[in-house]
Amino acid sequence: MMDGSETDKPQQDISPKETVASVFRQIDQAVRDNRPDEATRILRAFADAQQLDGAQLVGNTVRQQVADALSETLGLGDMLITDPQLPAGLRSLAQEVLDSTRATAEIIRQFSKIDRVVVTEMGEHRFIDMDQSAPKNQD
Image 1 (tube, one colour):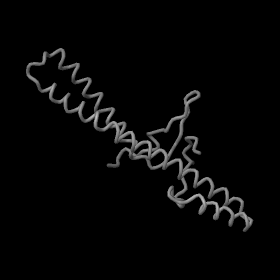
Image 2: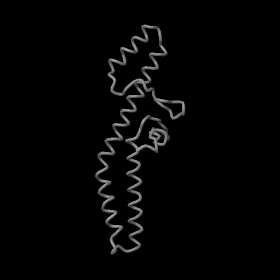
Image 3: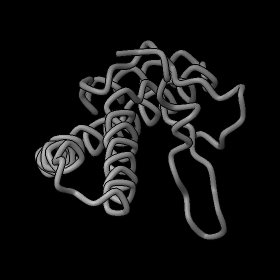
Image 4: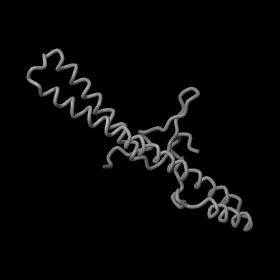
């Protein structure tokens, strides 16, 4: 598990799709070959890969489930903003709602771009550090 330090990098040689049996065979072989550091590395790599797979699964599910609602809100917001009968005072409020909805859509989109999991803690709660886990310049 990662603690947010810059040196924590996920191992790239274990796929999240790799079976538990396959990983344990690799660990067993490393132990039989008296390579405990290699066994530990394999286990950590598998745990990191599983953690990344779980984060991506949640991110993609949230994105898919929320996308329709946000698309509808954005569409209606755009129609409302362009309505010439909308009073100016309401137009600025509607623009704030629209901007907030776009920002929310962008946050959700970032979840589908997670390529590693860096965890940060706030009190008793743990969160994925999105700034370190999802590259910003990737579409």
